[in-house]
Image (cartoon, rainbow, N blue to C red; front, top):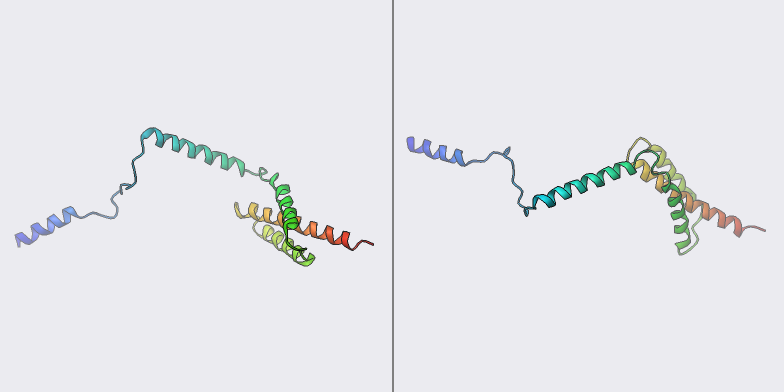
Length: 132
């Protein structure tokens, strides 16, 4: 019985728990490089937070609108007016529905601006083509 207990104690002594901290298996990085990468990460994070502050993404809306016009000019054939209008309407509805989301709203707003650029350029071309 004593022999059984000593085996059990040795097995338990060598057992590791799941809560034990894990060591990383990757290559060790010198402290100077690690500190510099940490500072770089903090700086880029601060810049990203500053760039998505309220009002900072507004200058990108005309760029997205122009990108929609560029999509119109790069199309192989003339887009149908109803499809461009439906796309713009659907993207605008999605932008309205996502207005409370921090990341989804700016993306949906940009897509809506692109859709509106495509729809406006299609409408303008259709109006010129059917002018007497």
